[in-house]
Length: 406
Image (tube, rainbow, N blue to C red):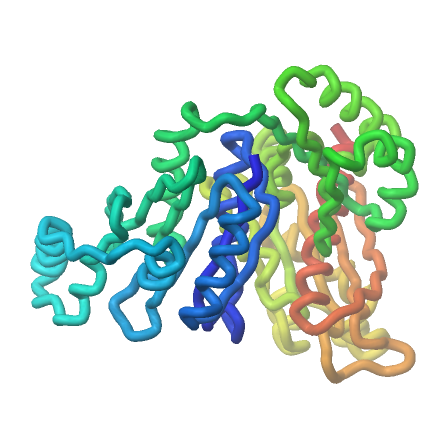
């Protein structure tokens, strides 16, 4: 079954990140559907019509998001109705529902909100429990058109409920998706090690590269379940400890699970990463079970006063050094009264680098039992990318040490 997605909104062509396609893809994959194409279109009626007619011609289902608001540039209803030669009809009951939603917020709805009470001739309404604009379902020439508002908190529950209600009636061979995660290996090397597997399965396999992770996405029909196990055995054999597992949680979650299982507590000392590592760890609900806290010692003053890094070390080797990273890790563990610690000190840029200590240089320290060391890395990218790569490399070291010491 071919599915195409159209995300509408001029803001998506400027400075907004299109998170809707990730959300839609995840929901559809959970029901065995795969997106064939996604495009972004600005708020121009002709552009919306052209994009829709092309997708409608080439697919079995078109999912459209955005452009259902009350303002002059919300043109999705008009554009799709025009493309299908259908009328827009004012729905009195729908308007009453909209008025009621405003009334609960003690607001009299502006007249322009009446635009949201118009529905496309022959369509059905999808209730929006988290917002004003309703969704729209249209069955046309044996094809399905789903139109949703753009805000993710409205789109997500509406799409989930809609797909759940209609998926049994959709004709398709159900697809199962498995994602095999590999850490600490570059994308090119992953492909090199799996060339034979890729040659056999290139129509069903995708490699997704992230700054800290490589994912092998395999999509097969439900009668091919044995193949998933064969593929996992191959990946396990070729990547060993770098293989995280199939359909695994995020790396911070994996670390949390290991720490909780081992009944260990973690503290983190950060300089160049400015609290990012602590933030990612505490994003996980229940992280208080194993995370003591963090020392954000950005300046040398705090490195000396809080983490007791000796003046002589800072003077002789500098804040960005193996010795400083070791002291930060050792004393984070000591003063945090925990079992294992991680430290980061480096130059995230864009300025501050030298020939000896370039931008991207980060020392990452670890202290656990009798293990105490710092490792040198040079990361590429802008400031945010360097910081993110450093944090995930630290998590990778942490996981490796905890796993090897089981």
